[in-house]
Image 1 (cartoon, rainbow, N blue to C red):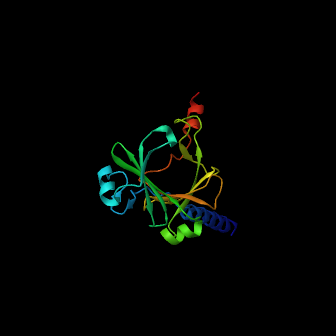
Image 2 (cartoon, rainbow, N blue to C red):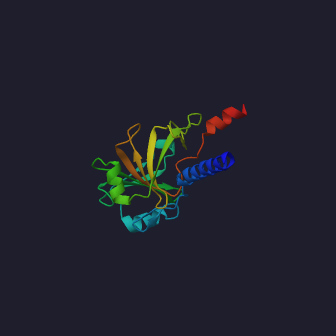
Image 3 (cartoon, rainbow, N blue to C red):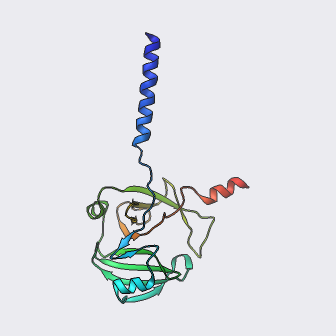
Length: 189
């Protein structure tokens, strides 16, 4: 009888562990976002002008000191705000909407639905791109994203503020690797 109880206990523990593992959501791969006929990662600058028209302003990207062109539009879809188009080597590299009014988690869920994952990021400080560092996934990181990976969309929250949505980002790729490059470099030394 003791043997049967031990076997059953082992079986239940195995089932519980397996159940816990299978309930942990695996991070889905990113799909390319689309916005009004434009596909991030493949549409061209000419496509942007064709579908969205002339921007109200054109500036240069400051973050990362790339100097890449940024075209700005006023939009109302999916929220009222400033839409920034980032062009890299003639291709649409990303879209960001800075909302005019404050948005919360609940607002984002109402707009895009409940199929998201929350991912936190931290700066990989050993690498510097003209005053900014790339991000990597870190559960304790100060940069929170609600990611709709199948849509290629993420809501970016203000630094160390889990309540205020700073931007809605349309992308085709991850914001950073699942581990720190700096930590890997330190281990090699």
